[in-house]
Image 1 (cartoon, rainbow, N blue to C red):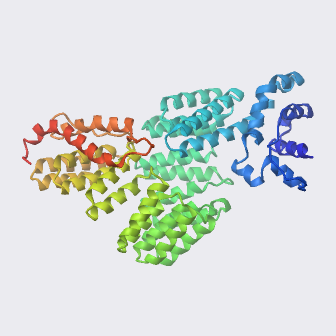
Image 2 (image 1 turned 120 degrees about the vertical axis):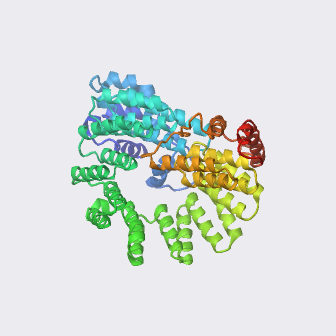
Image 3 (image 1 turned 60 degrees about the horizontal axis):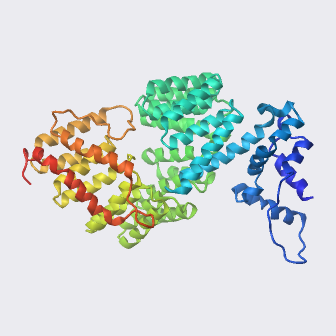
Length: 571
C-alpha cells in the first residue's frame, strides 16, 4: 500500500542493525504523517507508482530536493523527534541513548544543513541568504547536541562560520571538536589547519596538519593541504615530498589531486619529464584516471612544452571524463585562441557556455575573442551576459570597463569599474580594477586621483607588479624620479616575499617615506568601502551613476595630500 512504500523509502536510509527502527518506533513516526495533497479528476485511474509519486514526488524530484517539506524524510524526522521523542524513550529505554538511535537522524539533518549552507553561499545579499545562514547554523548545532563525537558537524559548522568571517568562533569550535574526539578525527585537524593557513599562522598550521596525518596516515586531504601550504611558501621540494608521502600512504585509495599537485610542483621545479611520469603514473590508477583535473593540468603543461596533437588529446580525455567541465572548456578555448584557431575557440566557448550558463569566466573569454576579431557589439553583449550570470565575478566587470575605456566611453568605463569594486572590495582581484581605473584617470590627467587608485590597487594585492610599475611609470613621466624609484623598490621587496598574505592592506610604509600620506589616506577609505558596500536604490541593485560621486569623494580625500605633493610638482 501507499504507507508501506513510504516506510520503505524512509527505512532505506538506515541499513545498520543498531540504527534500524523497530515496528513500534515506525508507528510513532507515521502517526501524524500527512500525505501531500493533490487533486485528481473524477474516474481517473492511478496506478500504485503514480499514487506514490503524488505523495512523495518523482525520484528525480526527491534527488533534487524539490519535494515539499511535509513530504521529505528530513522534515518528518525533525517533526516526529520533537513531538514523539518522549514516547520513543518510554517504548524502549535502551535505544534512548543518542549513539544508538540518532545516527540516521544526524545523517539526514547534516544533509539538510549542508544544503542550507550551499544556499547561503549562492544567494545574494538579502533576507533569504540570512535565513539560510541562521537555519544552517541551527541544524549544525542540533547535530552537535545529538552526536557530540561526530566530527562532520564540527567541520560543517566551522566551514559555515568561516564563510561568515567568524574566524575566532570557528577556531574555538575546531579546538572543542578536537578535544571532544580526543584528537582521533583527522577531518577536524585538517579543517583547523586550513583555517590557520588562511590566517597566515603557518607554524601552527603545519603542526595541525601533522596532527591530522598522525591521527590517520591515509588522510589524503591533510597531505594535500600541507603540500599546498609549502608550495605557496615557495618550498617546492618540501611540497613535492609531502605529495609523494601522501601518494604512498593512500595506496588502494588513491587521490587524483595528490598526483595533479605533484606533477604541477615538478613542472615548476623544471622537471618536465618527471612531471610527465607522475601524470602517467596517476592515469594507471582507476580512480585517478577518472579525474578531469589530472588530464586538464597535464594538458596545460604540454601546451607549454609539448606538441599540439598531444595537447588536444589530453583535453579530449579531460572532457571524456567530465563533459561539463567549465575549466577544461575555458582552458582549451583560450589555448586554441592563442594558436590562432578562432573558430575552434569560439565553438569551445559556445559549448562551455551552453553547459555552464552561470559561468562568467567563459563568457568573458568569449567576449575577448570577439573583440579581438573586431566584433565590438557582440563582445559588449557577452560581457553584459557575464555580469548578469555572476555579478560577483570581478574580472568580467574589469574586462567590460577596459573595453569601454579603449572605445573612448570614459564615463561608462568609470561606472563599470565602480561595479567591479563593489563586487568584491576585499578580494585580491579588485586590484586589477583599481589599476585599470587608475590608468584611465592618468590619461585624463587626474593625477591625484590616479595615485589614490594605484595605492588602492597595491593595498588590495601587494604582489601586483603591473600596478606598482604602472604607478612608477606615471611618477617618472611627471619628473618625480625619486618617487618612481621608491615604488620600484617596494615592488621588488613584495616580489621577493615568500608566501601569500591574505590580509588586505599588508604593506608597511615607513613614516619618513614620501608615500606614507598616500597610504594613510586610502586605508580608512578601503575599510569604509568594504564595510558599507554598494549603495542601493529603492529596488535593490547598486546605482550605476554613483561612480562620479565616489570619484569626487576620492578627490576630496586627496586635498590633504596636496601639501606633500606640492614639494615635488605643480600640476
